[in-house]
Length: 519
Image (cartoon, rainbow, N blue to C red; front, side):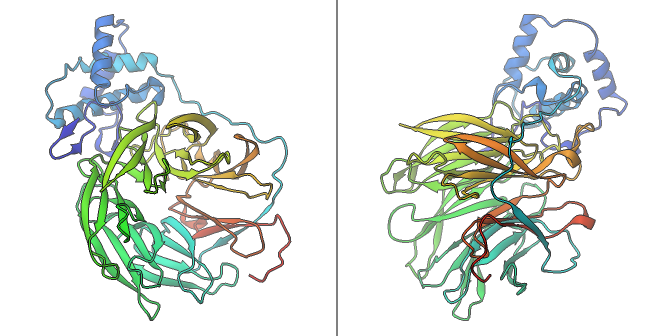
């Protein structure tokens, strides 16, 4: 449902997107009365059930009662009715709240149980040496590493690990084994994602950064797209190419309109009344880019915008992971002249599905781009539903995709593909990222997997190896041959977690083949 100029309000939802705004269920007063009324043994007639389903599923999929344990639904329903009241809509018939609570409570489990995925029957062929690294030394804040990128910034230098810390710094770590220290490239507001590109075609590698504009989720206009332009001295000048946006969480440089210069696709996640997908059209000369914003999609909640040419016409298309109440994976086919045709490839079954990120990769090596999806976002209400995990959308051709569930993983956040055991096919890494405190109280993240490797043992057949448990604070992941020994290593960044165990990065050195090159 739409309120104002393209702002989407989660009005009739029965899910709490902001749990801190709700009075606890145990509080006395109307919530206690509502609970008492809802637990009365009075069956609901078919007409009332139909009204509840129509009201609660008007602008999104009907919430599944299994999303929450039974006693949580009183609070969730109250929040949903509050959203509807504040939306300004009057066109829906709202059933009595206590009957809606009774509907969901009657169908919800008494407690949430979490699946225990099977482990591979044999060890993974490659082994890893784990090293924790905090190159900056003690800090007054916990690290909040939101993105990592292994890239070569200067022609005469080796690649470096570029990291976005949401506390402000964009840094480059040189020599992961040689301890050559860390270089601060810029200090922004809340950098979230970085893309290397030569934006002004001067032969020097630049960086384009998505700057959220706030650490915590909120509606505001402080989000930015920042160009870190490398000068001849090797330093990076901060150039703001777009401002006045919501929380910008992804940027993808590409020649969208095929006019010979680099444009930028932008995911403005926003929050409640802000957010959209933008195309920043480059209207300046190649060495002096100037950008004009063009709206592609008015919905908030987009987390990732990976690019690929899906129809072979030479124009960059993209796939968007759209969370919030949509929980959809949408393909945007580039029609030329800045026009895109949107088609939904897949939608989550419930508002708590929690799409975090997606990646495009030809997993089955059949010549087309598939979609990998990690769904484990619990930061809207800190509640962990039982269906977090990873899935593969197999590209069947002719615009058809088939969904395959890969594994269960509470807090699944990042998913990447790489041939880690050098057997000629792609394996997958999946990280977990959860709030420091989660609901329900019976949840035990200290026992859950936080880093999982999915080994491909046949076309599209994967088995699970849990690499780490009890530390679900990995919001970023990068894979590369850091030590140049012929196999692929990987690194995860730390975002929050206990201060006494916190480090900036954890490097997993692949010991699949003997090291023959100097790091």
